[in-house]
Length: 347
Image 1 (tube, rainbow, N blue to C red):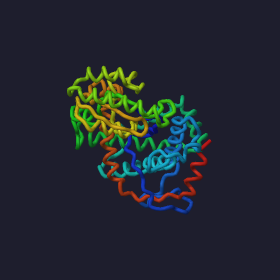
Image 2 (image 1 turned 90 degrees about the horizontal axis):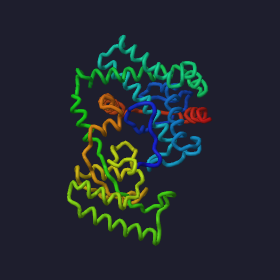
Image 3 (image 1 turned 180 degrees about the vertical axis):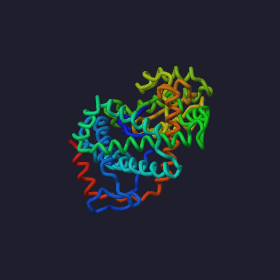
Image 4 (image 1 turned 60 degrees about the vertical axis):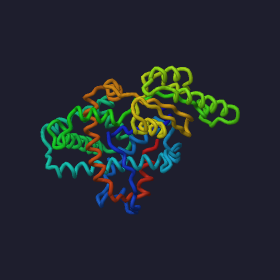
């Protein structure tokens, strides 16, 4: 069952690094990463996009949800700031990695840069509209130029390392095998121990009824043979309280990316294909899962085309390389400057 609230970055296909701030700068700058100044305009662009994403997700202004706990470790505000800092870390690391690999800016990279910049303009309806949007947000156009340069270098690193003739090249078949390892297709029976409209925990007779129902369903599933998809589907149709399965009759395609509650994800990967898992979550109640084999059509459902998945998967490998490089970064952020930036971006 998917979370009702999730935050997805609009900027990068990058691994989120939860930054551990080493201290607080008190001069006029935003701060430093390993002694290098944090590029303020690029940070503002990343932060502004994340704030807009939060507001679109929650349907309220950012300041109304900033202090809400997103996870046990951080609030929405802390997540947004941490992610925005991670964008800068990845950009700085990519620049260094680009030089370390001996790569040089060339005509192909310039053409790539021009293409993604044009795509950016067209997403706003033209260059003038894009620049007007930035002006309204108080962000200089140089921030977009820096971001596009980073994305172009990121692509060059990906091709150099993991492309068809890369130094760490993986075949298409090897990367597709990675999808089947990293994703699980799951049919799901939910027996809710919360009110599915208010998400308040059931009590008294209502809870007792739910627990009795779960005991009955659990017994029926445990009586099935391994790989009995037809039998599981019949039980699912009779007892399931997860409306999402109506839109996904072949099952959810699950990976550990925050779109599903963690207990669901853990259960999905705790069993082999054809087996059943029984897990509980505070958010919803009792989950009974059947793991099914992932298929090529699941790749297409998730990424549009197999080719797009291959491209994204190779980029993710670079993200992992960069994540290792920034793991020990020393980050100092000026809290006063940060508060001013956030305040300026909230309309």
